[in-house]
Length: 585
Image 1: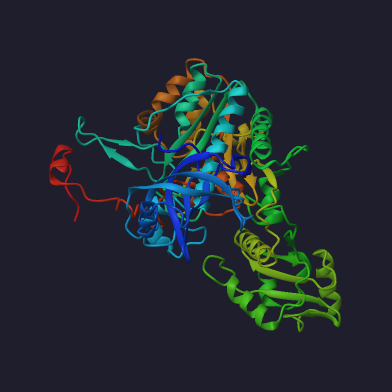
Image 2 (image 1 turned 60 degrees about the vertical axis):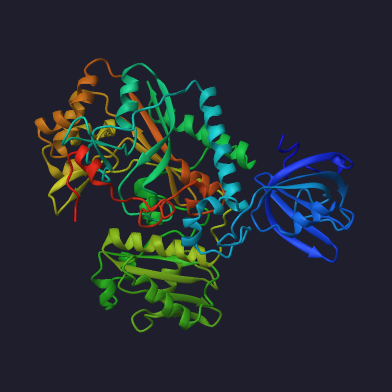
């Protein structure tokens, strides 16, 4: 056998045993007549000692070793004289009696250490080397553990894991589809699924009342730290349920993962918040509630003081930043420029400081100290606090304040990776109107049910009534990140046809794109609903990171490219001819 133990397994209780190890050479250190080798596999690192008494063949081979050589060693476990408390195997080492090189290695382009000297692009090109580093190994171990716990918990709740197709029909609502040409059906295309949405609903019609799948999904959209063109969902659906049943079932899953993976116990129900309250108090539909700093509307309080910026604004709001009253003028000027960035879109920033020598503001000439004190009282400010105010269009200003709130939370160290604040957000708008195309779009997807109390508005001929319909939908938010989203689905064919009508589909279009599900609903569809969790995002948050790349074995870069494989890439003329496609220029 190549090994009797792994490189992370040996302890003092193995002292005196003859063992065989195999792995990669992490580093070689020569000290006088001795050579020390750190041997690594995915389980850990063990120190090897080649002494003056070692066989000549062992000394010769050890002298020729380079980083990342694959070797096999045999020898005795002894207690280290110079122990290393930073690693689990740090109390022992192996005195090498036999050393064989299984495969020599070129010098790697970066150091394979916890803190590598390789840049992101270089490490992506050599991802198989980067994956040898402990941080990435730990990330993938965490991902594996979470997947196993998800399966174990859902199995205990009578869910069936059922696979759904990857080659499906394109339904261009939402993100762009990745399409796949069909050789056997020239001129026709499959799409890769953005989610298994319609299939899991069909499984409910088929009588499989509790379904789940840890499934790969595909969306051709712009990328960011928590988004990849291919990603993994924990996709779930239940029949004969209402919203409360869904929230209880999957709050149970979340609590199980907190307990089994992180050792965190949540004994109280997760907080809940309506979409309207989330926007009003946090300027976001995925608020980070680890810290307070809520938004407060000041519109009526600040108008009529001859400050045109506020007098002409639809909305004026502010946040109180605790303990930041000592910000310098330079810091405040930098913050004012920060909010003007295109991503934020604010016209400017007004500040008020509650200092020891009184209340100070950038709008002192318009507001008396008494008026500023009223603002401070509304924002619940105390001495030493800093108040930041923005104004403009209500929706955009609330969003800008929400972004500013997160930025100040980051600057003050209030968003700690080892703290977790789960939250349910519910009662989202069902639809949003787009002025450019003059039509409604589904906020979630076209199979989301309107809230029962809004059905009359849902069938109204008045666009304003339709715009006020709320969805029977909900999101699971963790630390300001949307981890999961779901809804109670439409299960009535007539309601589904009305939804397609509102979305501007003709009967022919609806039949062509979604006829299969409309027809299925006519054969006894039960009430049903579900949720899908972003598995990559959940893993990253549990690992204390905001980017998901380290939790995916082979991710794409920000341009959607796999720089290791150099994909996407052109295909040759023979393949194009088989598919009856013409190469683009």
